[in-house]
Image (cartoon, rainbow, N blue to C red; front, top):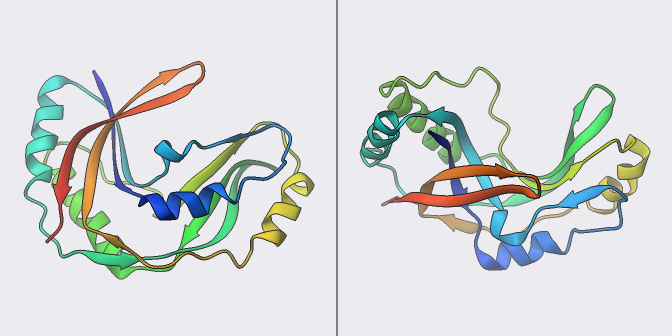
Length: 178
């Protein structure tokens, strides 16, 4: 079985900018720079045949390169507790178009379309039992965070294995944009 997701990579300079956001939030597990990406679709576990079908079908996705910018920070919560700190993205119709093309291709491989609204972001840290007031200073201090524009010229199919220390992601295929 393969545990799969599709994402766009983050360039090295932007990763350095994201690493500067790290702060002293007790209990935060900060994302390592080699794990920074923008998830377009979490597929989940599939067998070998579906994995092969997905790899082949994604090669048919055609789209032009485009620019993206990281802008702002926030968090996702579970109930009242924040669970994940993120850096957001400037709204991008091209990113949404790419996401939609991927959804259509995956649907032809038997993968259900995403039911939730697409909220593109870069995960900065995972939080465990941290009250909102512990992250409010971080949010206030970094509210105006932005990066320079960077080019999206590819997307990647990743496999992911879960370990006690965290997930390990492996690139299974790279697909270039024109």
